[in-house]
Image 1 (cartoon, rainbow, N blue to C red):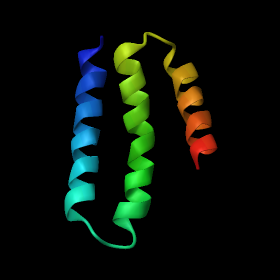
Image 2: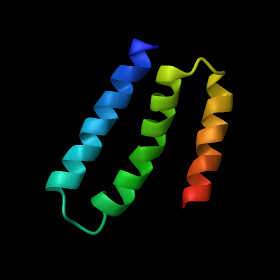
Image 3: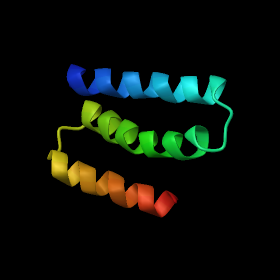
Image 4: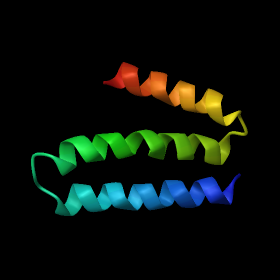
Length: 68
């Protein structure tokens, strides 16, 4: 487990929660929140998986494209 990646994931998760709770507009919540979820997933995966960063990044990007 990487504490550096875990700290980044936790920080992004807290930002996402703050956006969900306190921001009710037509730009930040739907767009910025969606953009921040991609690095959140990346850091979450890197916290528990010792893969090559570029491979994990490519996998997260493909996953995000499929979800969208």
